[in-house]
Image (cartoon, rainbow, N blue to C red; front, side):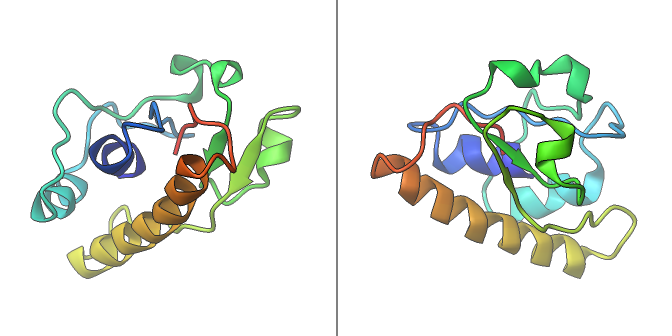
Length: 123
């Protein structure tokens, strides 16, 4: 969700690429539906593992794994977002999680647009 939302609303300041600890290789249907309800397309996106995105190449990593980002990405510029994984839950939770991601993303984008953070991150 985060990659699609960032591409949709912040491509001027974020070059988004997302990856997870246990990727499916596709966007699951509830995620696709939640994003489409908001007019956000996921064309060309699929879930990827960390090895597929080269985390060292990013200026900023947004970590939503639930584990401390500094431990996962030592030496990287990491911000931790406490966002639950809605996989396997009902559509209401997918929508709530999408709202949470959007709220965090809006704050980050405002910082980036004002020059407060370096762009090129991975939400």
